[in-house]
Length: 144
Image: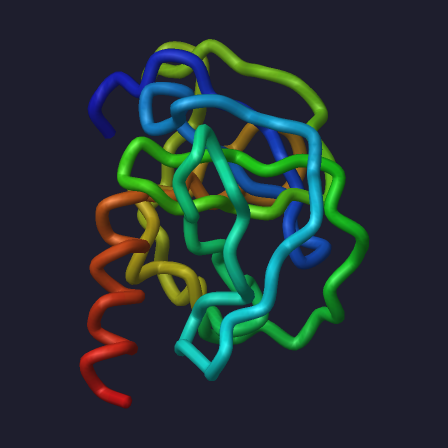
């Protein structure tokens, strides 16, 4: 795992996960998500951010997701122009091999868009790779 710097510990679809702060523009309080006029695979709608419409990830579209959506408290805005709705933010961790036990993604359904799994406390947490996640969304749209 390359040094990820600061990692944000968050929760989405009832699952704890890690986000590299270096992938984010900012984290905002949740606001309304405007629906799209038609379905777009993997996208729940759009938000207005700094005068620009940004797509919002539909976590339920990810492989293996069966958990119902819970209320969103924050939106993590990726540098690659995608908003991630979050149910909970619980803090930040200093990344790097010396601070985290790193495991390969293994059979995790989110493996296609993970850097690795990191053991903080308890079960391994997925460290999302924003580039892989956005590539996965593009592939879903191309396969419509």
